[in-house]
Amino acid sequence: MRIAVLVKEIPDATVRKRLDPRSGRLERSGERTLNPHDAHAIEAAVRLRETPSAAVEEIVAVTMGPASASRALHRAVSLGADRSVHLCDDAFAGSDLIATAQALAAALERIEPDLVLAGQQSDDGECYALGAAVGEYLHWPALTQVVALELRDGRVRCARQAEYGYDTVELELPALVGVGDALNEPRYPSLKAIMGARNRPLETLTAADLGIALDQVGAAGSRARWVGVKQPARRPQATMIEDRDAEETVARIIAWLDERRVI
Ligand SMILES: Cc1cc2nc3c(=O)[nH]c(=O)nc-3n(C[C@H](O)[C@H](O)[C@H](O)COP(=O)(O)OP(=O)(O)OC[C@H]3O[C@@H](n4cnc5c(N)ncnc54)[C@H](O)[C@@H]3O)c2cc1C
Image 1 (cartoon, protein in one colour):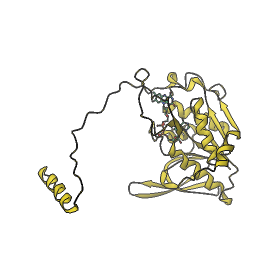
Image 2 (cartoon, protein in one colour):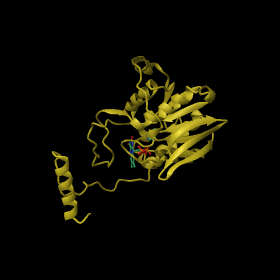
Image 3 (cartoon, protein in one colour):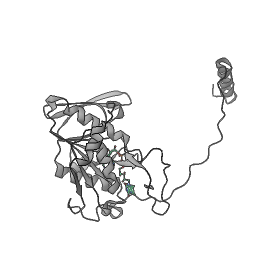
Image 4 (cartoon, helix red, strand yellow):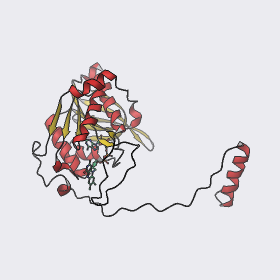
């Protein structure tokens, strides 16, 4: 059994996010890091490998991104992946979600995993949709927001979080599963794993390697366009009630709500 995990490099959470007014794209200079939601997908793959009945032989981390994204792959390997694949080509720059999904699906066809795991969202784009789009391109069953999973008899049995509780869904392999953060608590990599990650195999693939026509990816292959950017409207200033004495604070909150006929 081979598991591929989709991972993304994103701007560090401490970096103020900014859109480039000329291209309308997210300005991606500055510190970058592995998307934290993807650590849950790697942890899920590692836990399946630790389950002997799952017979996981290999975990492959896969990303599409600029040259710097190899650091996110090193991080993924230090967290437990055996090797990584980097879709890196100027032709990919400016790809929207659908073009990104198409390129990743082409790479996955080449890697031939039995199971693909993705995070629930990226902390920069936050589309929550890439996994479903990749599944569609592969013509595989795909499920998102999975908070428990188990491999058995060529199937993956998942608990999926919904507004009303949990759905239990079984998918026939090969399949794609987007994991929710509640699935697990990712472990920290050891110093040895961090040091060793750079020496693990890393394959770099271009659009030509994947047989993707240049008008299918990048800005040329993307139908999504940024048409404008503006600041959100300023909200009226909040009323701050300092909590010095609980009874007095409660009374002031009730009076404030009463004044506005909320209660
Ligand atoms: C017009 C336009 C131009 C863009 N230009 C660029 C650009 O130049 N450079 C750029 O980096 N992005 C660019 N993007 C953003 C990029 O297309 C999105 O990151 C991608 O479509 C996925 O959406 P998301 O990050 O919101 O993923 P979500 O759907 O929120 O992510 C879910 C999961 O999918 C996986 N995933 C997401 N992205 C990747 C990836 N790239 N590789 C592997 N796994 C992934 C992760 O497991 C993640 O947890 C552009 C988007 C648009 C609309």
